Every structure is written in C-alpha cells, then in structure tokens.
Image (cartoon, rainbow, N blue to C red):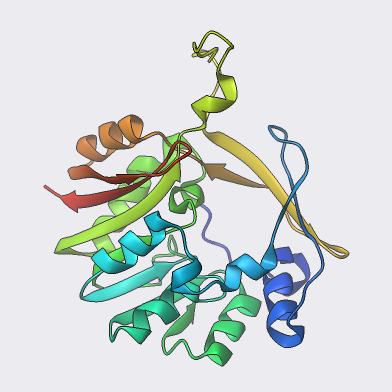
Length: 243
C-alpha cells in the first residue's frame, strides 16, 4: 500500500483546490487514463455544499456518528457539513495544499496524513470514504491489507461508510450481455494521471469495486457489508462493520 504524501510540485488536485479557494476560479483539472478518454474534474464541485451533494453522500453524512474520520478530505466539504451539525470529525489528506485550504476554511481537525501510514493512529466510530472512496485501495489485491488497517483505526462497534461504482457498464454489449475477460486484471482497476496547468502528477492506481466483490472480501476479513443505497448509474453506498 502507498504510504506517501504528495509534494506540492506533483500535486495537480491540491494546486487546483488552492487556486479555487484563493481566486474563486481555477483552470482545467485534466484527468488521463488508459481506460477512458481524457476528462476533467470541475474544481467548483470539490467545494460543494451539502445541498449540492448527491444523495449517496448526503446519506453517508447522516449515518456518520461518534468520532468521524474523513479520508481523502480534499477541500473539506464533507467535514464542514458534519461540523455544521455538531459532529466531531478529523479530516485527513495526503496533499499539503489541500490540508492548508481545509484549515483556512474552518475544518477544526485537518491533518496531513496517509491512511495507510501506521504512524497515523486513532480510534474512530465512523470512517468516511466518499467520492468513490474505495479508490485509494488501488488494486483488488490490496483489500486484505486495507481491512487489516481498518481494524487498527476502527472502534469495535464502529463502521466504514464507503461509496464506489461497478464499471461493468463499460463492457455492456448491445444485447445486454457483458464482455469481461476474466483472465485479465479485475475490470475495476484503473490507472489515472492528473494535470493542472504545468503541474503533472504521478500515475496512480484507483479501484472501483462492485458490491458483490466488496462483500466477499469483507467477509473474508471479518467484516459484514450492508448495501445502504444504490445510485442511478451503477454507484452505491456500503456500510462495513466488524463481525
């Protein structure tokens, strides 16, 4: 598992977040992948209010209780929404630029940390992983290590709230069948690279995982998975608790 932080000169998303916070506008945050055509992330959406969030995210915020860990918090939009309802939340991100913006926006506990770095310690009732929160796991083979790490950070009665998407729709044929080669790597493993202005980030692995596969790996690691809500386009919110 990757335990590194991102240096500012290799941090496209953090740079875009800082620009938008400081100037109320940002240039294109470009996204490249071997699986998709070039795309971009609307930076303004990283600063959305709770009312502007999709239903899956609003559901997760409502379900989050106790001491909450917001993983990959970015600009802090989820943490700020939780704070507004009086909930205790610690926000972590691997981007120094993003953490600086979170602090300036009023996130009380914004921490520069990598979830998988065991120097980061805590005991949480809810671990919140949103905006395709499964992504940071990177590859399917990392799931056992991910669940071991969750056991270190999670209160025995706590839960993980995670959203993800099933990418099988990319392989759907006209007759409704799916042409997925089972001999290949898992179809939800995607490589990404971002660019903002002249700042080019390193390539990274990102995991989209279908609910059935998540449920299987969770059970093997001593967790119980529950499907909380399904979105309109193969996305879903899951709740994971220790058995």
